[in-house]
View 1 (cartoon, helix red, strand yellow):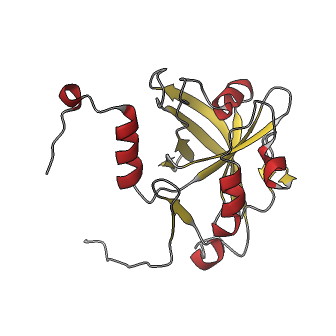
View 2 (cartoon, rainbow, N blue to C red):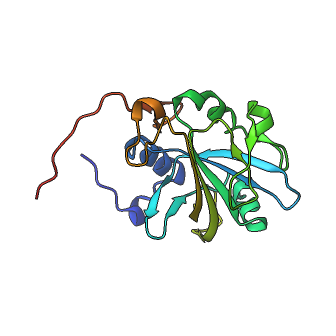
View 3 (cartoon, rainbow, N blue to C red):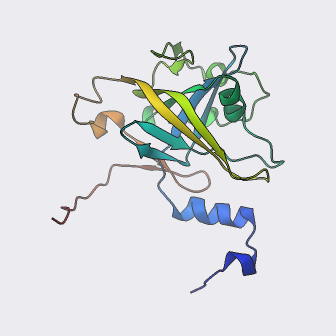
Length: 204
């Protein structure tokens, strides 16, 4: 058993990242499309992601700074065009999702790289992945920056203004997990399926 007081032990950001990604899991994946001021689209997955509010509906995801402390295209684009689409891809699209994690030069289109068709998203100018079963069109509320060193986070708070959902996935009340086939992110190259569930009654 080991205890670490971070001020004293000085664990490196790399070690903390590996502990976080290996123990805080499975993590849902936000597959986020943005666009720059010239209309060039970007698409990237982020597994530091969750719901942060329902009324108003707000999602939060955190693109980390790169190895040289530089922001990802998602952050740059949100500063230019404060809109995005957060997709829930599901297992059927995991290969394309993984492809869009590639680091491309700024302005190059991950939709094209992954062979994905674009579709319009109501209420915003950023396109969505046409094949994604669930997509949330969002307007940027805030970006909270935690520093400028490598692996520092940028917490994006995005308010949902429109929703696309496949009728095979949602009947207006319940999500069909067999139709959605959601996936979660583990550490390294590993992903998780939600095919082995168990239920517990909440205490009253």
